[in-house]
Image (cartoon, rainbow, N blue to C red; front, side):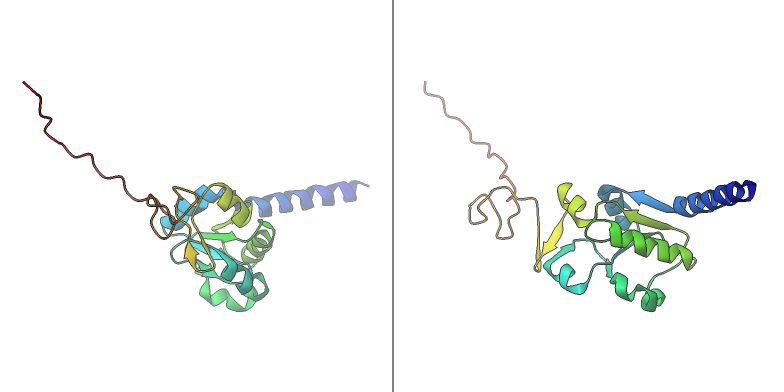
Length: 163
């Protein structure tokens, strides 16, 4: 009985220390980290990424099914952010990377669903989403990509007063 309790406590301690090595981060934090040099890896399958992708410069696409064979593409000396559709596959990838010796590993919570919920930029079927200014991209208020046109500065017209 005592042995079982001791083993359970040891297992809990090991599991807790292992789990602490993988940071759970928000999409906004992931975007900031990627902007500051962290390597973001999308572990979804290629067909998923083709439909909807994170608009992050330098993002790597390494499907979970291939990660074991592509470790040479993942630097060990940088912060690593793993992302997927919902956060489940990226958590599995994070666990795997930690087991293989990676130290600075983060899992983005909620995946691309949470990313979109925070109105962060995505690429949908090759087109980048910008902050839309209107529902109709053909409106004169919008650029062809759906982003808002810059408002023209008001011109200073000299008003003439009648005397």
